[in-house]
Length: 298
Image (cartoon, rainbow, N blue to C red; front, side, top):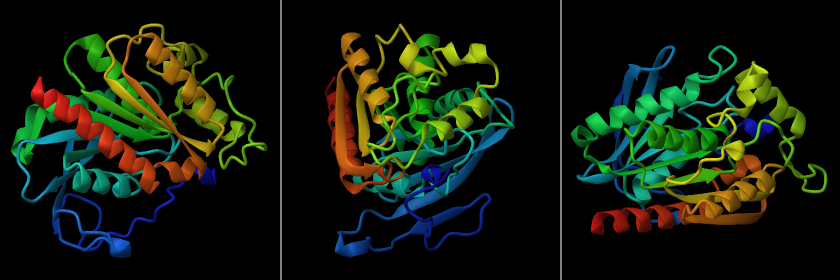
């Protein structure tokens, strides 16, 4: 399942081994790009749904009153880590700028549905209570994720709406996994997709062991009939990805439900690569900046 592996290696400087940490980083950006603001990176452990989970916080050193972005890594619900989310989390923290909270949610098959979305909800509640201590303003709150993390990002927005306890201003979903039925996949050979239907099916079997779970709106957003009230949405898809059809179908349903929605498909990009693709990240930064600025003026 190589498509579920990160396309960017994790190689930060100045970091201690895994565990509780606080680190300040001032490295120059690669490839001659202007360096972003120095970041303070720290880990916080909170109670999750079935186990303790780790939140990794990325905070610009000079930032205060920053918007807050929850980020969820990919990995098909069964793989992935905070380390693999580092590239995107760091990018958003530097370029928005924002307090980014990368969530180490529980993975299947050890912790199947609903552990991951419930972990996400607990992370969002923690942000509401603690963001100010880390320079964040939880009244400007966004969420983003890639692959399985794209579904979890969308679902935590659904949960917050349904429970009336967390309000998100915007969400950005990168190649999200939205349909456990797998009935809206593209042709993997024609698309030269790096992810296959069989790989997706294996991930869903681990994450949703009970057949009845596969129609739950928090596990199958594409089947959800109540989409009104979700935050403004950016859906980013990759041409060389069997999942781009279901993601774009979901964008259409959001629009029909009255949700402000933007969808962008990038040609000649794979499922694995889209989560860290520079142009896609830049598009998401512009999208979040617009939504956060609109919120600030409201």
